[in-house]
Amino acid sequence: MTALAQLCAINNLISFDHYCLDCASDNVATHKLCYSLGILPVIDINKRRSNKNLYLPYKDISKNGRPICAAGFECIRDGFEKARNQHKFRCPFAFEKENSCPLKDKCTKSKYGRVFQIKVENDLRLFGVIQYNSQKWKIIYKDRTSCERMNNRILNDYKFKDCYMHGESRTFFMLVMIGINIHFDAYLKVTSL
Image (cartoon, rainbow, N blue to C red; front, top):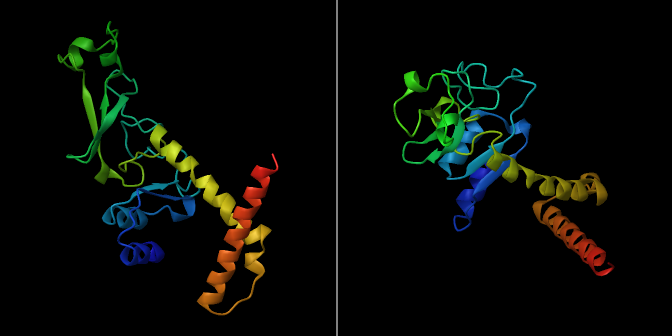
């Protein structure tokens, strides 16, 4: 968290859209820091510290993070309202031409269907701007694996963790040399095809 705050303070011309982290960084403070810096956090939930159903404290929310209507059906995600800082969900039958909901006359008279909102403030970890485990969350989080492969190459393949150096300039020089070698390896792999 300190490194992220320093990076943003020093390099104010660089902007970050997303900050992807694994479950070791699953805490509210990291989410709050990211939002204060204008960065959208995409952080996996630490399953060892929480119940199997993450949404258990929220009685009317399914294990997929969607509200459950009075008839017992999961609602459909209908976007994020930035002005109100909340996720919007609609009745699943509102999208169909023939409404076959058993409570269609009792629930709402609106043709738009019943609307459910979940505010981000309820739980930053689960209901952030990019809701946990949503399709958009999964797409962004999948890109994190390329960073993990790069870290693995630096630490294990090029034995950076076995290097004993004193001083930031020597460490930086060694990381630059490793980065050049990794790019050269990729170049050789592509040209040999």
